Image (tube, rainbow, N blue to C red):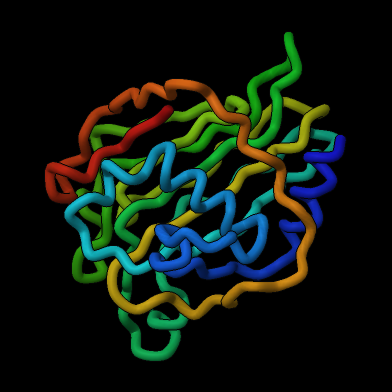
Length: 220
């Protein structure tokens, strides 16, 4: 209940930015969101980001509140720098997008709404390929992390689960200038903690060739 309350309150806040220096440095995190990004960097992202001139992480919390018909989905879209698109028509994608699933699925209940990543990107304003032949479906499981190249189309399907609120921590890892987001520290409610496993083992998912070979869709 405490984790649900924290995620729900954080979901009402704008996106935040955690610079690389703050995530890799030894100083105390400037807030719970930055602490969660540092934890994710150490546990999952360090080997994937190695060799890239990444500059920081954009993060926010998303909560799908249940309705009488079940959890609503999210239309397919691209993660992008919204300010760059609005101000100069530039479509900038993050290097990687990550989804950390915070909610527990009740035993015997229908699956929470899954994330679907398509092997499809946007090139010159054209969906490429027009009809993708591959996709990845990730069902939410508590403390599992989905990582995929940041230029891929993705969305969330509907769910018949009427009793559990879908909660996710979303982090985009960027190269170059930071997107137009807030900058910590800021007073905001604690995020649900990320429980630690002694030896998390990444499970590699099929590679989407639209990015360089080192950028793979990975789940732990």
